[in-house]
Image (cartoon, rainbow, N blue to C red; front, side):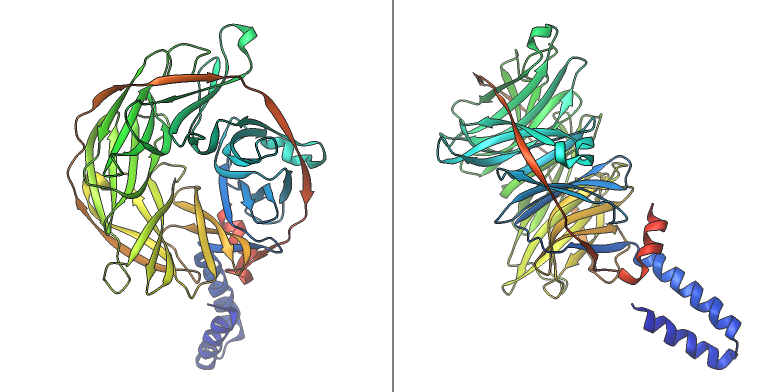
Length: 467
């Protein structure tokens, strides 16, 4: 709703009250009210930069994000804040296809794949850099480790003990098999303070590993096995020894089968500092959510995915997950299709939902909206950030869940309870070790103007209110 509508309202009131003073007070109140409400949703466009895939991760405090963007010509990292003014963007040389990233202790860790000139093909890559280095782009470098044994590394998590840092990942090897990987640094012996890498697989099981999460006692991996007819949650106890991969020396994994058959990949959301992890996957026309506390599954639920008119979509795909900073609400990004038109739906799911049932709120970007979300990032209480494309430019959207103005349509989905997971069974696994070399990527600073596309006229008030 624009200024002109508020002005017309004030003029109508003035005709009856005939008071300039009253008009001024009412106009000020309405504009402030509009700023407050419309501050709940905002889209920004990074002009002159296209996108094929983009990510964001929040920096503490809430007002800053580290962002990644990829298009046909380049990959870039950057730092953005709520004002949209103090932005820094750098281009990487060579190009990196980042699939996932996480921030811990002022360092951003990422994984993906890149072109290797020696093998003349795509290989896996894991890398990291200090976020503070973005303040000095001319001297900034990004460290990375090549995995020539892998086609890609697609999901990562992070944890540290008193002496050892761990970056667990999942990816696909050159042999076509999926592996669980650990890149780790440190140990009791000072001579071991360098990055090392190991990976493992489960013999006699053809598993596709979709996602990985680190909970209090274990590293959890979601896997699809038996020609994708079942989903197994793999719980691997963290090692109690410093300077070893997280899966050493115990050579077993507990596998817990979740109910129903999946359609597509299985994504995980952990609760920091606890043994809670949530598994989300498509089951027919439903989104399934399974809550685990350790290897136990106390509750699960179905969420019906519907068109706004009430019928099931032709198909939908689970794209991404995130959680707000208070860990009260998980947001889920879906892409739905009706009559060859795409709708991008984000459901905002309370962490208690699998236990209590009910319904969930969400919002949807339809084909009439120029914004296409590609990934999610949690923010302050009930805040959700998406990175995507706006009118053929790289874009960012920020909302406060339950307050959706101008940019998207509010929706609701019903929830029903479902059966629980099966008891775990134990499997052995095999470990592979390899030499590790840390390389460096030089970056170049970029100047990208950032334009406000939603609630633009109330931008200054919006930013003051939401800080």
